[in-house]
Image (cartoon, rainbow, N blue to C red; front, side, top):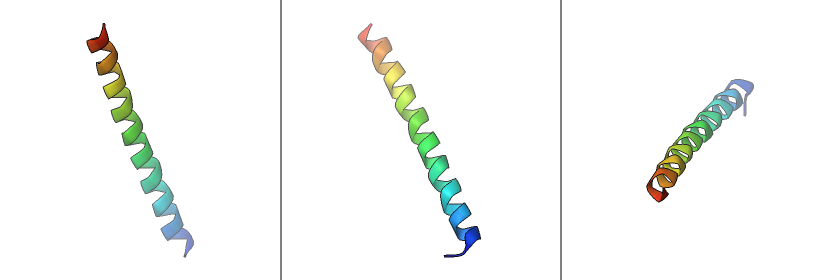
Length: 36
């Protein structure tokens, strides 16, 4: 695998993790609000 492809995959994975984290945080906050 060449270097450029590896950098692209790293970027894609980091972006996906950031999005999932944001969604999880939003859901968690919503759950806490609903719980209160």
